Length: 255
Image (cartoon, rainbow, N blue to C red; front, side):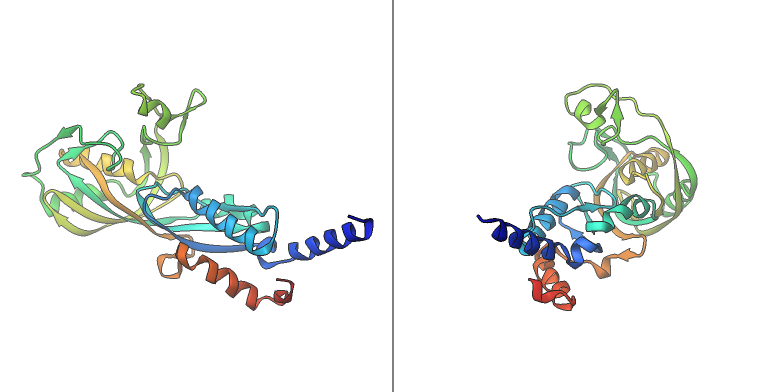
């Protein structure tokens, strides 16, 4: 390649960097069941770099969702990744189903039931009373099956090999809990909460307070800051979304 060809190639690549995604976009993605948040990031990054013919592009998310959860993942591209820390601090809303009368080590269905408890004493009035005790600023011990670090190691790595894990309680904020559906052995609730709240741990604590144990059977994030579930783009819709953004851009002729 001659110097002129090399300069032309470099100039062409620089033009490709001048795109809406490198400049920075924030979008809400519907996280599929069994996907990790990083799976979503990696797939969107791959689709963008391939479409824009870029070697690399910054893409990140503003709040992890467990693989067994669905719903809002806020994705940032390009220069907008600088806002991730701010976006992570936004309040979130979750809708979750809690199975009563049993517990699992992970507080969800990732692990098998390890203990059973009675539920005959549970009434709607008792559930509503107990739920309100968790509203406000409270102390919460994170799940042992979590990414919290203990002596430099992830808690879930130690828990999965049977090692005992002790995690310190952390201060969290829960603005509201609404009971959507009640049965003696299962409840569905909606939770408005602040950064760092583990809904799995909340299910554990609600179950303990009810004297019945409890674990998650479904979890969905329906809002994160200003992004709610009605505005989400599915993974199948991402390629179409990319084309739509480019077509609306003044720089569409570059692509």
